[in-house]
Image 1 (cartoon, rainbow, N blue to C red):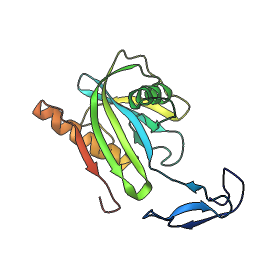
Image 2 (cartoon, helix red, strand yellow; image 1 turned 60 degrees about the vertical axis):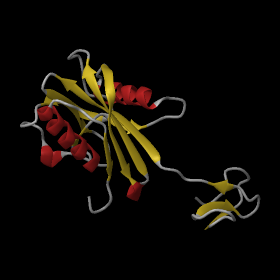
Image 3 (cartoon, one colour; image 1 turned 135 degrees about the vertical axis):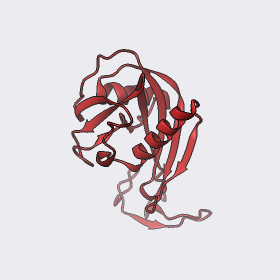
Length: 178
């Protein structure tokens, strides 16, 4: 950030009085510009013993596989965002079962909220951000071509939980070493 969105004057990065973190602060009007983590919401769509994945048509990680997910928009709930992203990326209509995975990724200022969801039908197709969409069982899943650590972690939990016959909510923290 170089300029204040309130008055247009230059900003500097410093710890404001009474705070404990560096922030962008306007040198003219004093407005403090807070930067907060971005929420990524999405679904783990299920169809019997398979899950629906999308092959990315955009960067980052062009050509790799992921769950349908993306940044939450203002004015929507986490579930609404997850449903929207699933429809946009996979053309899939789903019914949310439950919140399944909450993953903090502080190194990139993101929090992932992934919902287990039931596919309502097999009428799905790639959206603008996907090259293809396909159902995979655990053994056919392209594990080495997954786009994100958050997706891998969620899928590992899912297949283990399915073997156990229960699906608890998972909390994970990923850093550069995870």
